[in-house]
Amino acid sequence: MSNQANTRRRTVPVKVGGVEIGGNAPIVVQSMTNTDTADVEGTVAQAAALARAGSEIVRITVDRPEAAKAVPHIRDGLDKLGVTAPLVGDFHYIGHKLLTDHPACAEALAKYRINPGNVGFREKKDTQFSTMIETALEYDRPVRIGVNWGSLDQELATRMMDENAKLPNPKDAAEITQEALVVSAIENAKRAEELGMSRDKIILSCKVSDVQSLIAVYRKLADS
Image (tube, rainbow, N blue to C red; front, side, top):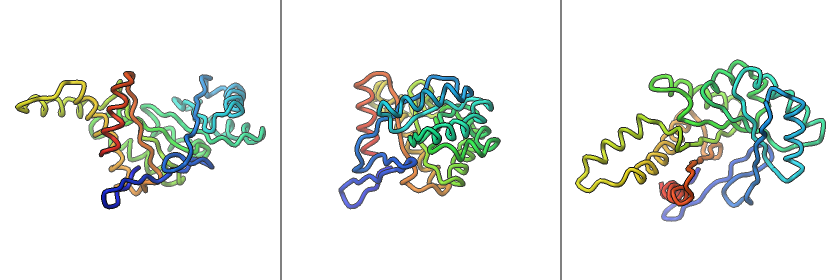
């Protein structure tokens, strides 16, 4: 995340395994496997191929218990091949359960990707989000808080739309959606900090399909 000193904004790099992201670090190449993560041999082969092609970080889907069980074996397989690229776990819906039920998976991953729109609703959302952050703290792992246009927190979006509609000169819906993405990213990062996570362990990301909207979102995020 970014720190502000006086009027100048500085960013601190986040270390993912042996790779630094952000700050003054070089741009990092990350790719993602499209194998079934439960297929250890296939995922090792593809992750190794990606790393050898220049991917400095490899992301894998961890979507069910079979995939979580496979992760430490994938890490072991890559280590045996001399492939040091960190593995990032992409979690949806049950990430909190997979991480707590499979500690070897939590330890083998170098970073956890959390989508706040896919971790539960209302009271379950904070509990499940908090569980993932607490696991990351236990294993000293960074997190990527990735907010997605297609899975934006609907309660937040609706609230902001309602507040906007009451203004004398309301903004258009697209701009409010952009602002909601930024608010979601910042609020969830603050919650991670409240739980004890330092800023050099948090990566923020926003995903939008339209390029111009994506640029606008990141400009807003940079100013937040």
